[in-house]
Length: 104
View 1: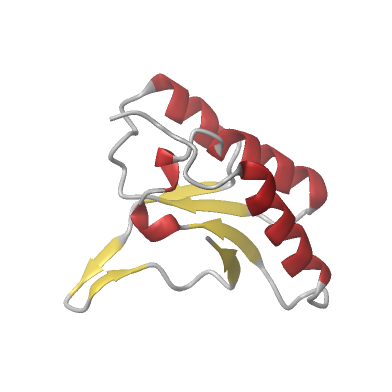
View 2: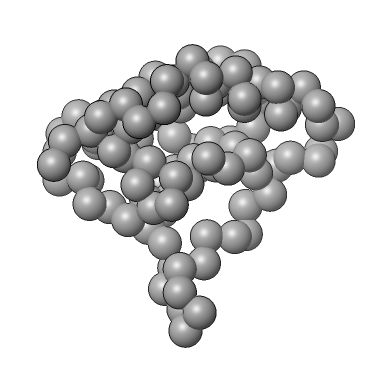
């Protein structure tokens, strides 16, 4: 298994920028990449993290199931994020809430 661009990274960045522009300061406190547990499957995740950090001072989180964390390039990509977290298992399934964020 290797990272692959699922959605064009430019489209994702444009949506983040639009969402940030349509909210008042303080309404969003994190930008979070979730992707149903597989954001590290997107080969542009490192680029996206760096671009988002270039357009906002908000912290950036990546919530991942960790399936590709053994790959050095994934480690490099995630190093730009403020936080990387695996999902939190609960009796209701994975809970990824807790970040007031733009989530993809």
